[in-house]
Image (cartoon, rainbow over all chains, first blue to last red; front, side):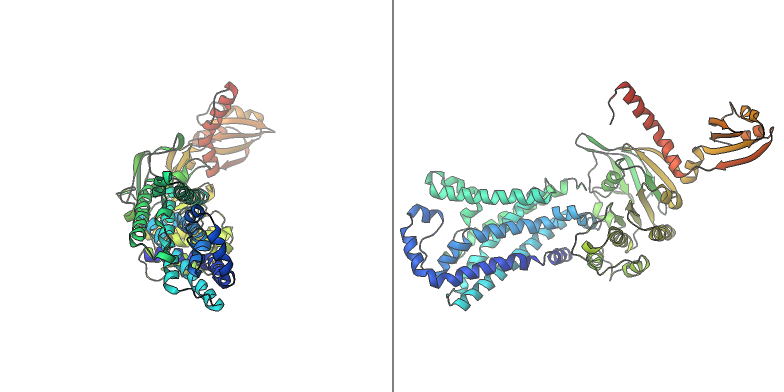
Length: 259
Length: 309
C-alpha cells in the first residue's frame, strides 16, 4: 500500500508548485494588503445588507483573519482545493486507466480496492501538503507585511478545508465506479461542489429553504479561522468521505475496466 | 493442470459482442499463439483472463484458480504486457520496475537491469520522453523481470524494430525452456509461426481453430506449379483428390493441393516434366483460409442485401 501511495505522490509532486504556490501567493497577497485597506473595508462592510453578510458568512472585516476568510477561505480555497482533490484522485484511477498504468498495476498481485484506497490516501496526503504550503506562504506574507495574522486561527482555517476536499475526492471515487474518463470524473464532481455551494447559499438567504443546506458539505464547513474547528463537523465530514470512498471502491471492483 | 483453461468464456459489452464461448487450454511450458485481426476479440479474451473484464458467462481458470475469485493469487504468478503499453509520462522505467518489484515482493529490480541491457532499454528517462518502441521494451521488462510462471502478451512486438523482435522471440523461447507458459496474441503471423507450439485462431469473437502450427500448415493447400513438355499434362490432374484451382498457361500448370502429394506425383510421372515447384503455405495463407468463409458470407450478404456486421 505504501509503495502505491508513494508512487502516486511522486507522479503528483508538481502539484505542490502548481497548486500550493498560486493559492499560497494569492492568500499571502490578500493578507499583505489588509493593513492598507483595513479602515476602508470596515466602513464598507458596515454598509452591506445584513442578509448579504449572512449569506457569505461575513460579520465584520475588522481583523486580518476575517478578511482572509471572506476573500479566500469561504469560497476560493475550498473550491480550488476541492477541485484539486478530485483531480488528484482521478490521476490515480481514471487517469491511470487512460494512460495504461492501471493495467500494469493490476497485472501485479494488487486488488482493485487497494488501488482505490492508495489513490484516496495519496490524494489526502497531497491535499494536506498543498494546504500546508498555502498556509506557510500566507504566514510569510503576513510576516513580511506586518499584518499580524495569528498562527492558530490560520492553521484552523486552512486545516478545515481538508475534510471538504477529501469529500470531493470521495465523490470522485463514486463517479469512477461508473466512468473511467477523467473529464467526466472531474467535471461532474466540480459541478456537484459548485451545486453544494449554491445550495448552502440559497439555504442561508432563504430560511424556508434551510433544509437543502443539509445536503451540502458547506453546511458543515463553517468559519474555522474565526470560530475554531468544529470537531463534530470535521470528523463527520471526514467519516462521510471515507464511507463514500469505500462505496466507490466497491463499485470500482464490480465494473469492467475497458481499455 | 493447464496454465490457462477457459470453458465457454463469453463477454458481451451490453448488446455488443466481445467474445463468445471461448474454450481453450494452454499447457504449462507451452507457447500458445492467439491469432486474429483487430476487433476479433483477442484483447477482450486477455482482459477477461486478467479479471479486468468480468465474463458474461462461462469461466476461466489459471493454474486451476478461478480468474475472478482468485485473481490476486493468479497475478502473483503471471506477467502481463498489455496491448498498446503505457504508464504515464513522468515515471521512469526504473521507478515502474521498482514499484512492481515491491508489489511482487521481488528483491531489488530482479532481472530488470539485465533485460534492459539486452533490449537496449533506457530505464532512466521519463516514459513520456520515450518512443513507442522504447516504451514497449519497458513493458516487456515489466512483464518478465520477476520470472513468472505464465506470460500473457498482447501484441508484444508492436513498435519493436526487427532486431528487437528477434531478441523478443529468443526471449520467449528461453521462457518456454524455463517452463513458463506463454499466451501471445498477435496479428503478426510470422512471429506466431516461428515461436508458437499451438495456435488458436479467433474470428468474430469465436475460436474457429486450435491446432499445432505444423498441423495447421498441413491443412492449408500447398501451391504447386508444374512445367509440362506437352499441354496434355493438365488432363492427368483433373479430378485428382485434393487438387483445386487448376489453371494452365504456356505449358505451366498451377494448382492448389490439399493432402498427400503422392497421387499427383504418380499422375504427372506419365508425362515429361521440365520443372516442379511445391510452395509450403505461410501462416498468412492459413489465416486467409479460415477467413475465406467469412468473406464469402459477406459477399453473399451484400448481393442479397442481407444485414452484415
